[in-house]
Length: 191
Image (cartoon, rainbow, N blue to C red; front, side):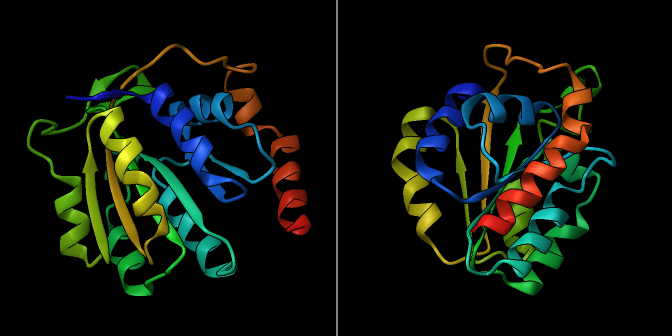
């Protein structure tokens, strides 16, 4: 069972308020459509750095909750970050892996061993304080508020399928644009 990513993100947008949210690649487009906010950090460029960026932001701003919307393919590029996050133990970090079994940004190629990999199991073994897997919108609506309220690091595996195509805002040029970075810097200064 899986939920549509756009519906999941719309529900999450109602829960996060003024939290810092790190999103990456294709998920970033759906996240912007759900919550266009100055505290959105768009992690694009080298694949796999959303979780590392989220860790840095969580350590640098312990007064703010940081939610990472990582891709399963992206997390595979930087599995060592699971151990780093668990060791640092940021209480304000909620790390979500948006699992659809593909490198979606690169044409939808399947991730290796996609029917066997257990991201929640990896996070638990790495030492995350709380770990959960959510596979339906009903489960998400029930469990996610509780997970967001826990002291982290929290890891949540979101089993998703693509939803409606979000506006691409000029495709990746928007995600890489200097105005997006400046807006985030200004947003951090304002809180």
